[in-house]
Image 1 (spheres, rainbow, N blue to C red):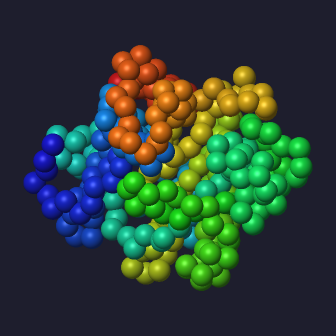
Image 2: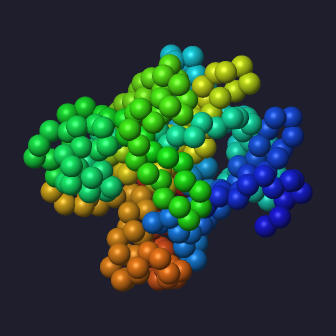
Image 3: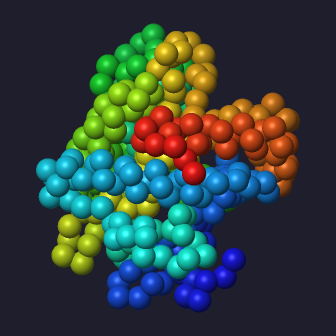
Length: 287
């Protein structure tokens, strides 16, 4: 696909175009990434799910953002070129901050690996006796670097966030991230889902205000588990791309060579998980 707009950047999943007047057009593709690789097999409708769910979440989170004097970057999801309608957002151009703001309410994934080894996630010390899937005593802020395509996000201490953006902004990022997570987890619980963890990206507007950017609370950036079957001690069933990660692990792929094509049943099961997350959260049928 080629739009009659200057291409600014191409990420693992999105293309970003210059839309003029301090605006960008974010177009979500059906590509899926795992273990820092873009897989060769797309997931049908994934780009539309990511976009439409992000638009829904921006609206839900506006009161929390406002309470911090912050905003989000979405301008319009309807005033976009027809050929990308449904999977594109017109957004404000921002100076993005060089930090992935990760909030965890449950122990899972790389958090479990580090906790098992050290009893903590970087500088966040956790109680003894936790296992994969455990609910944490309170949600924690475990930031990471923002890696380029093919490279790996690395967990960092809070002091590294301070060094990158200054102490006042670091405190603001931590507090807002945890407040957004708390509200999103509450909404997810009302839909019968556990929001295990998620990541946010923030930018700064020309007037210095903090702005929530990128996508938010989608199956690409979050772990959603069915609350009815949550049981600590093992990997949880999920409505996100963990299913793809698990298949890749079972396939014997070494995470270095080019990733394999996904079988049709894995593609369909992954699509179903993304659509289910959208429908359960929003209460609307995905069409």
